[in-house]
Length: 453
Image (cartoon, rainbow, N blue to C red; front, side):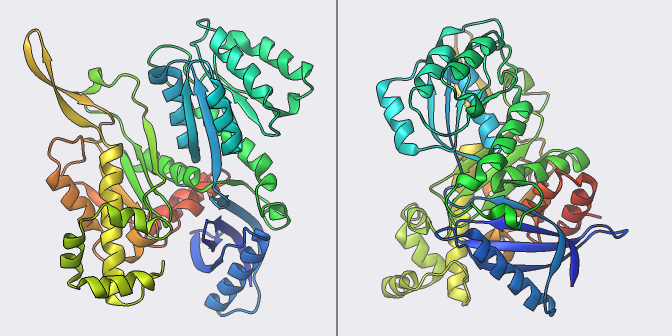
């Protein structure tokens, strides 16, 4: 059987291959194959097994394809460290851009790097280092100092500069002198002036750098023997899908509960009521909770749930719970297993929303008490998208969001009437990477999955 496009999602535990026909009048999702990820040896082995599973699911002998795209969060995903001048300015802007691109940020620093910071960078062994600092034609010294220190670490990895444009020539000379110019990427200042976040150029360069260097990650050295189109970080792909939906249907929030992490992506303008207080808050925001997941990090999540409440919700005793956890699987089969994963999913979603969404704060001024907003305002969000295996495959997961909105009246959440949509075909990440070449096709596919007419 020949298909137009395969899109692989190479995760930390599983590899998924989704098949699409995109050159018909109406693009269509054909089916899915799944295998364990084989990052410890060669990811193409797991990729081939997923294609074989797809063949079995479609009841055909073989699958041939014209194009294959991919997203990856295997081998720790895209590990980055971010270093700027002032935390609330350039550091925050750089962090937002990196998270938007799907990075897992392992270290964020403000001001000049210390000896301890440099030791942490070596220990983290990031895939990319990002140096920023100073508005255009503003402070120069910190970014130059940090760049010199990072070059001296002699790490064989890309270094992106997204700071004061006055430093460009001097930074280029640093890399030429050290004969390391192949490692340097220069992009527009991520914070060119006060309260302006210039995220998009940096995000694009992060995508490109990830794709260029993915073959150096563990198990990825043969990836382009099968993938002949774009490859990007999986969370970045979910953000891209959210962005094309935002352009079509308006302000949205996407909740993605996975086996290892819980990500929330929001693209929304603030309300007129709060706009003046939220200058500098990004239009698009991603938060990633590396400690919240329903499989790899399920023990972390269990610690956040009161044992008595969990036993009550599951209607079991301590002995039954212990037995359940001893045989825990990321694919629940029995009703009791599904109920446990539901409770884990609920807690992941609640805490991730706590950390992502803004709130109303009481402050005391000379003229008395005032209530002012702080953080991301999502009161204008019209659609909440649920994706990730647990939120998509379990029943009644919409209720998790509905209940959270009811219980948190002071948070800057969508209205109770917000529409909650499921990614029924579970193709959000696939569609995001596909949109880099076929944006109109990608939009049609994701709307079908969300059951939007």
